[in-house]
Image 1 (spheres, rainbow, N blue to C red):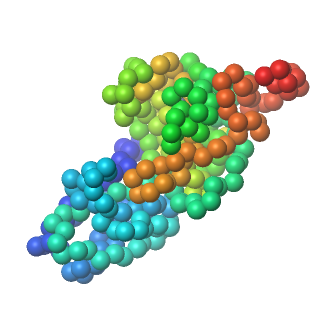
Image 2 (image 1 turned 90 degrees about the horizontal axis):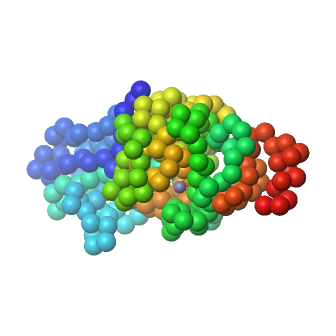
Image 3 (image 1 turned 90 degrees about the vertical axis):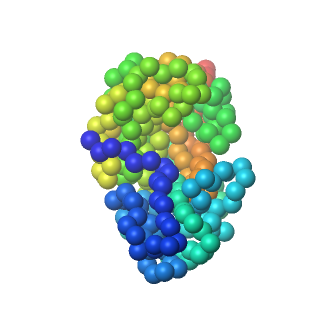
Length: 271
Ligand SMILES: [Zn+2]
């Protein structure tokens, strides 16, 4: 299983030595092309929105180095000039394509087999602010999770134990899979079981393909799957966007099924 690589990758560059080796992942690279020009190279199969900041960047105080984030398509690169006064830079990026309008609201396949009720839907309980368009489904640990839409696996984590608690300090301890869809939106599957991810970074997954087992890792009050669809807001933040399961916007108590029977349809009248 691949190790996940992180949203934020740190590269240090000293002006005195632009030809020095620069630490980089093998997926998204920051490369000096000459004394004053750099390139961000996206070798992945997913668009990214990238920028360069100081290593001590404070989101509330500082500005990114580039006035405009660089949108870099899969297998493409973008050049940018580097200010000679910059003593060090850090590459930041988010997966996906930036939208000026809202992307079309799409119907997604249920990522579990069977009939379930949504526990937490859009704008409910912990689903607030930029993360408001999300769905939680309570599931026993070890339930198989399937891709809600086809795409390429761009990032994953499976290192954390299934000892989730609704505490903020657990927020970065959730195992997850991120799948980049053809339109540059990102399907996010969270709170997966420790060592329960079945796919690798770079895998092309068809809708309905098994990707992981559910768990209870991270910021979580009970074993469940959290699903949302994200687009980048800028190189450091995401937004979630609305979607439907079985044509319905997720909200608490809504019944969803991968095999919608006449009974489910009848019952849905009363929801
Ligand atoms: Zn959630």
